[in-house]
Image (cartoon, rainbow, N blue to C red; front, side, top):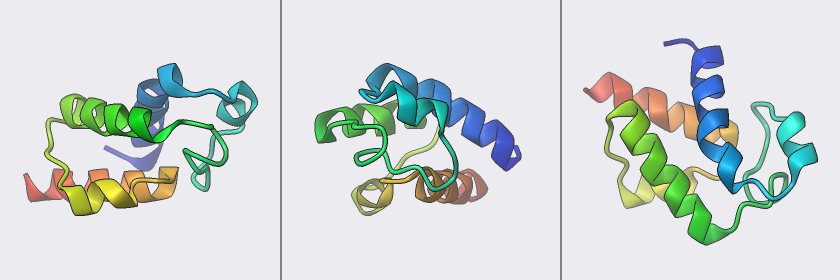
Length: 84
């Protein structure tokens, strides 16, 4: 799975939690979930759970704490997929 496919799947996962629609339109690798999309911390947990379900991976707490940007999230997803 390439980065574009991962980004597309990630965008679909985060869309229901986004408070800033303009930020979602401008989504890119540098997008910050909290600052740019205004996703609150409780919903970030939901995003991580949805990512685990979508990609059939398990994300540990240390990795979860790093998933604050699109770039970091994709790196973690790729890493977890390689471990499978």
